[in-house]
Length: 116
Image (cartoon, rainbow, N blue to C red):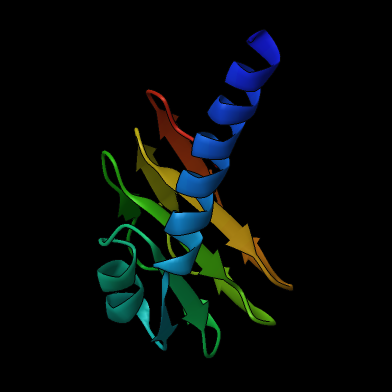
């Protein structure tokens, strides 16, 4: 009986994780405004279409689960004093793809049950 319960639990967890990825919407991001809009909706995959200079903090709010695909591009704030680049408050941010995130100060600030 215990073995059957473990398999059922794993099946439910695996299916819910799979469902989130299937419902993900890929959004092409070209600038700071489109990046901020993209990270405001759970399930979005924010795919960079070019390098972006961050002139303000990007907030991943409570309950938001989002992915940023660097797609061979860079996020930076070398010319500004943005601190941090990303503020994640009880949300989830997954960064994928080739590229770099360059911060003159802190890149990430985490609060609560946050996943990066």
